Length: 139
Image (tube, rainbow, N blue to C red):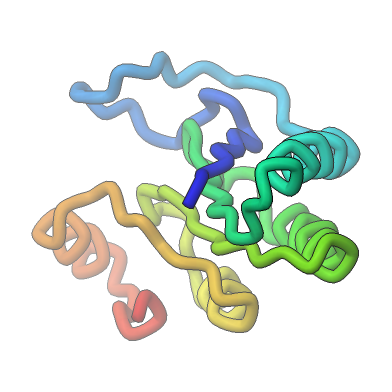
C-alpha cells in the first residue's frame, strides 16, 4: 500500500530533541485548499495505477500543531475523496503526543486515525505521569 506523507506544519515542532534530524523552525501551515489539491493529484495518480487503498501519514515537525479544526476539515476532504473515487484511505499520525488530549482522542477514535508514537513507552509514561494525564485516551 502506498503512503502519502503530509507535513501540515512543515518543520514546526514543540520540542527540540537532540536526536532529531530536523531543525525545529517555525514553518507556514498547510492550508486546507493545498491539502485538497495535493490529495486529488496524488489520488488520481494512484487510481491510474488501479490502487484503491492508500495510507495518509500526517508527519512533521509536530503535526498536532496544525490544530483540531484543521483535522476536522481535512477529514471532510478525505471523506469526500473516498466517496468520489471509491477509494479507502488509512489515516495515521506520527506525533510526540505533547498536544494530544481528550478532544484529539475522541475525534481520532471517531474517524479511525492510527497513532504512530515516536516516544518510547517509558518516555510516554514519564511524560504523562508528570502531566498527570490519563493514558486510557491513547488506546
